[in-house]
Amino acid sequence: MTDVAFDPAAHGWSPSREQRFPAPLVTLWHRQASGLPSIGILCTAAHGNGNGAMHGGLLATLADIGLGRAVGMHRNAHLKEGEPRIVSATIQLDISYCGRVEIGEFVCSTARIERTTRSLTFASGELRCGEQTVAMMQGIFKIIRRAAG
Image (cartoon, rainbow, N blue to C red; front, side, top):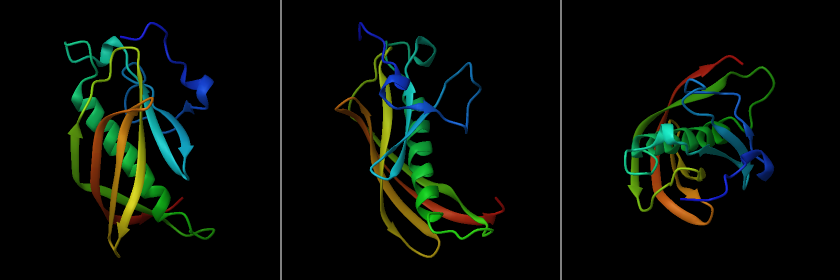
């Protein structure tokens, strides 16, 4: 367990405008990393799995959101004014856990777009605590519609 609490704001993170969870459960943090969005969570006791670490289900959710935001940014990067946004849905998500996120640690996503087809986007990435990789992930996202705004 870390003795000093990580302060996401002091490291260039800002609270995400898009909250997928009730605020009392988790605050999602957001910043750009290598041209793609990175999403992070500060692990608190409320996120624990009973063994002093973040619950794997919350890590899976972070993986899905992190990859999904990267896909959305990639698919909508060249939209012209007034064009509807491309919306994709996760159709496959694979996660390999390879470490723990201790209470008090900050975990964040990194993502890469591997390949796109007309209707699918293949993405991969990692969840990291500092320099330590705690999970590797890959997903397939299908375009489901174009949305206004």
